[in-house]
Image 1 (spheres, helix red, strand yellow):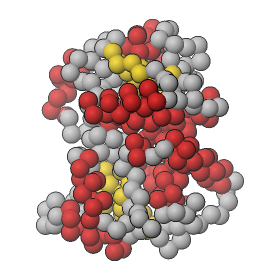
Image 2 (cartoon, helix red, strand yellow):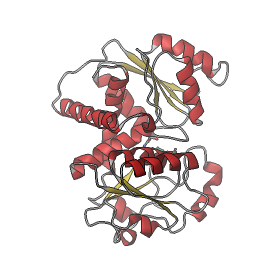
Image 3 (cartoon, protein in one colour):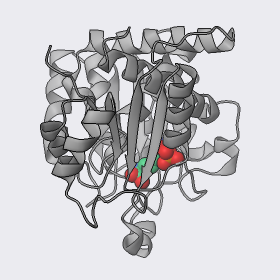
Length: 308
Ligand code: CP
Ligand code: NVA
């Protein structure tokens, strides 16, 4: 059977995405009940990290350990990659040890190259272009809160980044309206806009791209933001903080949202993106969202290995 990678949610149908969410819910129930469940016994995953991580690293290591498998953390000072060895050679070696290779990288093409060279499935732990595991956790959180995804309106207020790109390829496909506010010169990639618009037309949902946060938030059920300065953009700090003036999510902005609004943020968070009143309110589901990173990554690993 041909191996399947998990690089972007654009590669998965709505049925497959919902199936992964169902599996994540079952895994949560098992863990909540302290059930012994070890389908990954004797299996291993390598985790290459070219960037920092708290949630992705810890949720993946912990989830794989619960399932009876072993996850190896490979930071950039730990392995030969990038100093003495190419990505190609690294991939060819790792897939002889590990059932799955997971990687957090800069360029998305790094994951595509890993995929070409590895006989084991590749899982995207974040690239500059996409962060699909994060969006599975977001969708799990949204579905638990509202009961279903179809018909909901999600608003993004912030940077046109990897987290937004993953929402854009997934939400319309699942029957959700998406309304995006990004400042001038910080809009999402044209290529991703095309995918999202096409899905929106096919699924008869709304797609809005604006520079006005209030327009995006209007009547939205879910409001999402993220850092204005993603990993690798530290040099742009001053310019970005200036460009994002007026984009802070706060109660005044959210007075335009639907009465049942919830707030999500993948974390880590800085107060200039969202003020404390919203971030620490009972409408902010960011802690549940972070917890759900664990069940969703477990579901993805099991699916990629055809073990669920
Ligand atoms: N949300 C997220 O991916 O967090 P980390 O960078 O801590 O993994
Ligand atoms: N957009 C952020 C997400 C961090 C989890 C980044 O890429 O740094």
